[in-house]
Image (cartoon, rainbow, N blue to C red; front, side, top):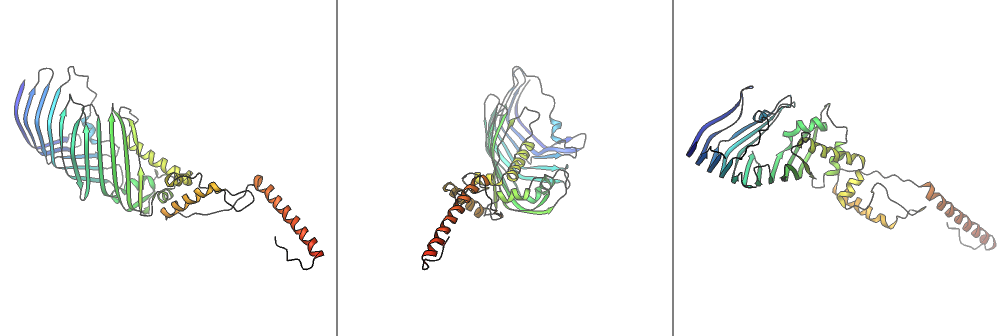
Length: 369
């Protein structure tokens, strides 16, 4: 069978028949210069696909099931020869994507509105297609996606998300960290690469004007010192910057991006709790273990190599105004005791010499230690 022509669909709706909930749809779908030939191999070419009023409803239910999984069936057997599909241009305008997480109380609902962009050069025989650029906004939170992707899940994308109000994510933070979020702005810049279904992404997360809210009781709250971790990470400009790499095999059933990100953040807090001075040293230029300063045995004179530690500590405490440092003196009995004994012995010898001179010379100056 062959077909050639234009196609237009209006008010397209996809519904979950079991729960009677809308999944996705669009106000209008236009296919320009569509050519189809079903004779093997299946061939489909399209000059342009234009979608307006696109919407999607992503729902994570109370049992942690995702509504979009109704589209995912068993992996089909390989088709030989594979179909040949070519779409020269895909345009999306005035879209809206809503995410509703019902697994939390209170529920979380986020909406991306004004989704739009252009994808060019989609072909099953090509390795990559281009996105230039795809954008969305939630009120005044711009999201931009640019890059290339391919038919076998290859991708080289950049994602920029700016100005997200953190209180909207407070249920997540409260569940795991034990505190509500009173205020804060989130910015994420991600470079995502997928090759041979292996994900390798570099993510820089920036949080401005972060502030804790009221404490929350949750069975899943971490026992790690969240406030200490925030104090270690927040700089003098009230900003937290975290580099968060995510890697994994998309075919691994145990690989979950959310768990990987959660594990990375947990490890960061664990490092802050176990060795806060090591974390500060790694951020502010090293110098060794900042938890202690070494002095020459039996003296109050710092060893020369300790100057770098002092410089790093000054820099860290200046940049992290929430941190408070307690200083305690200590000594090493095995090293300091012999030196102190020697110093005491030398002091007594000098005292005896002075006493002998004083006895013979009454005008001798007063003894000074």
